[in-house]
Length: 117
Image (cartoon, rainbow, N blue to C red; front, side):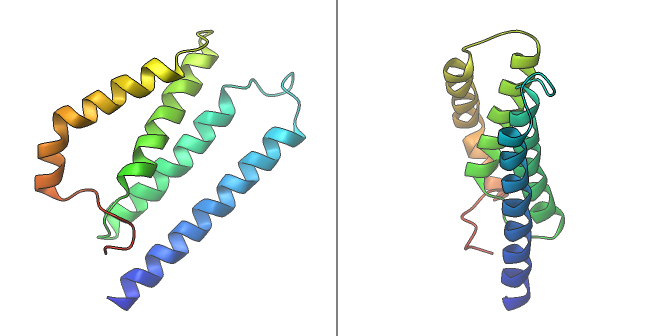
């Protein structure tokens, strides 16, 4: 469906724009002004928001950006809580959880490649 493909492209473009704004802000604003844990939370919310917009518009979500969004938000929250160096173990826990629920996710066809609309 060309209309859905165009909508997906617009959503991705907006998400990339928001990501670049966050990235620029991280380099522009000092860590004394904004705690470093807020930046990954912002990036994660952008990825999760992109996939929520896809879901509510009848488009397939991207498992990759959803996964990155969850990791980013969780890592940022843990960083704000003062926990350092948990990104690797957290990545493995979330990946394991995904594999546990993979059959359910595939049955519902919630995720797919962004090109598959």
